[in-house]
Image (cartoon, rainbow, N blue to C red; front, side, top):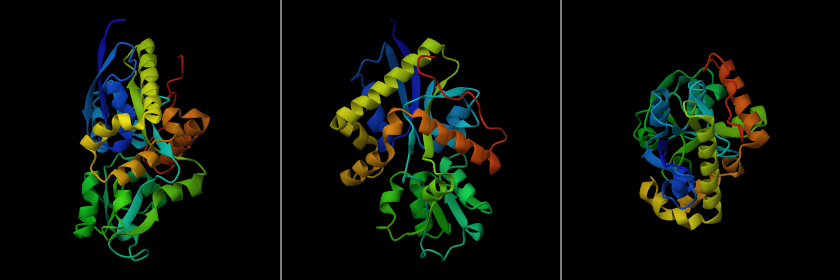
Length: 282
């Protein structure tokens, strides 16, 4: 089997570097696949997917709806679970900010966080896009009234003097009784089916390796983490890397389908994508 080199885009956040360390650093059988990693903020990854720059990419489930004709969702690699959704925070105490009237920082127009905000508060209009790691500072400095936090921000906002307005993930779970679909790993439909299946097997193998040997990825995780406190990094991984990350399963796929139905109802997309999942052995 000859070596094939594939561009693989994912985020520098601990959950991704933890899951994909083994495959990009050849700690597992990659079935002759070599990966050219590019690490970038989630909204940058979303826009790269719009340009179809990567053969394999992490992207927001929200953004995926706009590229479903070009990518399939892998069974493994998703950030999908319970109690791990984005948080809407402010400098002022709970109830002091009305989201419909507030200037709100979001981590990108096509992030799942932005869509969950719109689903929870349909009247929000004054949205300002920031790099996810700059949102806490934007709120604290008063450039915006509130901000939607993802990734490490949900572990650090209290210590920085911010207050919770709404847990957008909890509202989603209460509304739908489903897990929260945050991000997925998708493979280009341009690749032939046999190659797509090889990619899927390697991604799953890498995540399984991470679960079995969690310290193996420590250096790679630390190299790219925004927050270097090892306790926060460990919490981040535990929260975002779940059983759904190893295999979406029927429950995960159902949560994703309902997410796209809600996105359609909210006017964020014009059509719910179809035939989106790469089936094992397809």
